[in-house]
Length: 109
Length: 109
Image (cartoon, rainbow over all chains, first blue to last red; front, side, top):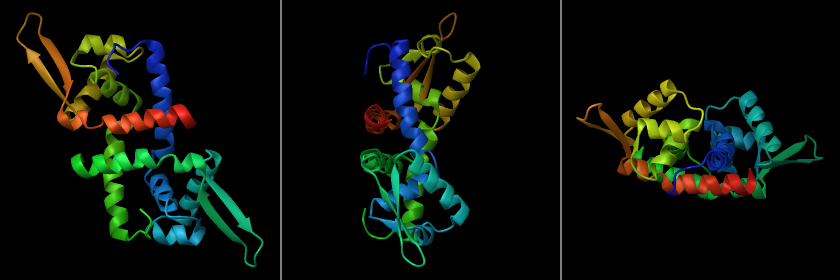
């Protein structure tokens, strides 16, 4: 970590971090991911848990996370239809970052 | 991490994480912090290391980081004046988050 950065290194690091930030960079996005660390959730369960989120925003954020491969959506052919959201392996791998951010915010924020 | 979130918990976590994100949330901000992990740097050294940053942007970001208590600025009474920037203890404590983000971005981004 302690040699002077070359342009190439800077670009690589920038890319890695920007990828992480682009996933975690929103308030609701982060809270959805954190909720899903507790297990699968239906749309209504997420909405009730994330006090104050509008159904439209929740729906948008879930679609973004699905596109990025962080969560997966499973629809069951019940009447009415049941849809569940769960973290993928990629999503689960965010756990350490979230833990460190939580610790830092609590100690220093 | 795995009970249903209460509104109070959600708020607390949200606060912790938002504090961490507000510090790390910009491309240049992050790269400045990472550069300073290698030791003290003068303005000109930072500008050369962060290829592409404008002096105005670098100056703004340094002021923001100083206001947030992440870096400290030391001016020496030389001619011309010398100014050095270094991480504070609060700034140094970001190391684990940055490490985890870098690993995640490299593996999954």
